[in-house]
Amino acid sequence: MARLTRSEGRRRRHLRLRKKVQGTPERPRLCVYRSLKHMYAQIIDDTRGHTLVAASTLDPELRGSLASTGNKDAAREVGRLIGRRAMEQGIRRVVFDRGGNLYHGRVRALAEGAREAGLDF
Image (cartoon, rainbow, N blue to C red; front, side):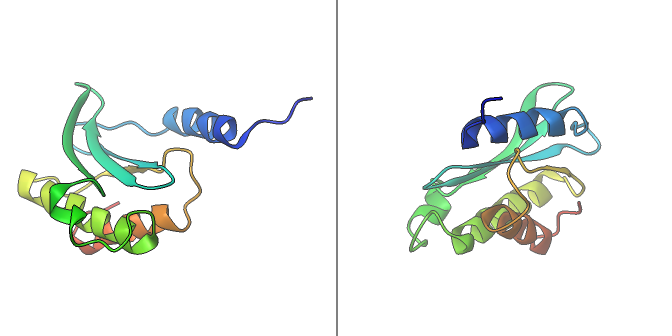
């Protein structure tokens, strides 16, 4: 049996997770994507297929204030930013989609930052 590469394993975990996690208008999905250099987060209503709120380390609000874009501090700031933007839109409760990544490190820091901003999941 052939071994999966790291990206293939993450993709399989993401597909397995997406069978169970779905965003609704009452409780949209907070989707996280982690690259080597940046963190991205979106709040998505899957019934309509619309992105309601988005934030990333590339955002002009964060770009100048971050020392590095690929660490836990940057991920926490992205979580706080998406939490603030969601609160402005009236979104309080979400379902967390870790994107096939382990709930550890930068993914965990983003989730904690979003909780600090007031999101409930």
